[in-house]
Image 1 (cartoon, helix red, strand yellow):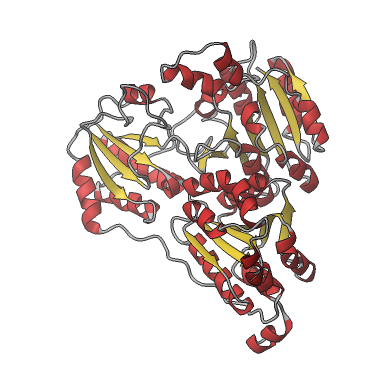
Image 2 (cartoon, helix red, strand yellow):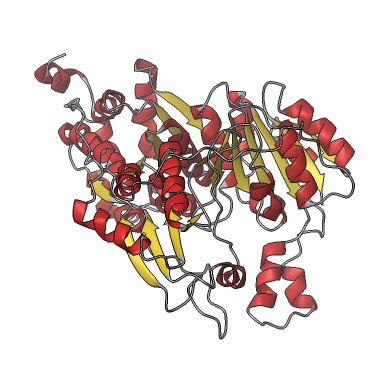
Length: 522
């Protein structure tokens, strides 16, 4: 089809869909409204675009995040005007923190209708900008395709981010659409040889050092190089506390996470004199606390930057290892005995033991276990090879949508969602989408019927807690019934009140097709 033929035969919405497909974006998580109906109609004419319906925009945006983390390419979202965008902002914040490539498609009032200030009229561009690396409003149908190609380019530029395209309804229904060719994104920059040598000199000083990794520095090859550096210099290796994706399990190099608690991190890193950052800014404690320091390492530690998030992190680590003449190292060995499931009282350690024993090969674990899950990550270091995804921006309610998106991206792999009950209530509609799409997701719903993490924070900030305060942090009156909630969303579910029943249900759920929820009463 020539450009002139395109202009005479297709509208803006069709040029949008065809341009996205040409740019490699073939999955859209959607919660459309009136202003997006021409996009929806275009899907009938262009079946190559897979569209997954979410019943709440926070599910849509979180699913796009989870999809891109696994697929390595953007998904699109389809959101209804400014209020629809607003409903999805929390998980777009998480996606921004994860540096996830997402293409937001946001409907808007027709250009000629804005003057009447209809009820859904907002400044959608202003709302999108804080979570986006790129934002644009299109005013004419013939500009839609070019703007879509630019949005994909911006989302895919290193290190990745959210690109938001606002589309008034008339530019979608008007004829004159033009399909645009893909645009090459900016690739990760190479760290200069001088910087590599400078960091090599720092690590040769034989001072207690920390190599802190994030982003692409946690890919398998990059981790192998980081372990070479640590072995040659004695530097400690850690990742940031919350990471978009970490490859883990038997046969892979392990990486310890920086502790969430500022007190625990300061104790763990009390001897550190040099901090080398790879793909992350200098970390701060998650919150401020009265009379306590802001950083998780000593105040007098020197901070050095090997590579910024937009740099080629695996290459920087490989070249640093070579500059240090660091020999290759083997993946640490693990006990060869067949791991056993957890027994006894329900505890974080016992559940981690069961996960480690029964997790299938190449599973994807989505961790929003919050307070109860403190043993899950360290306790599964020798599980079967898997990927570990986390909530990255602190806005709870991302776990179920992340699992939904990851499962759409990874057909044939089991997704295991480790999900706290309080945060699950932010986006339970994700269960319905899992059922509708028949996705292989096992949800372990950790039901403690309280906001345990907030009860911990209440004590940490030194606040006095009486009955009124504790009632606000209690979600057990009335008790949530997750077996019924899941059933109402079309997901089969059962309840476990002891480890024996949990082990039985988990072994079954990770091997059967489709979604299944286990309510684990803790």
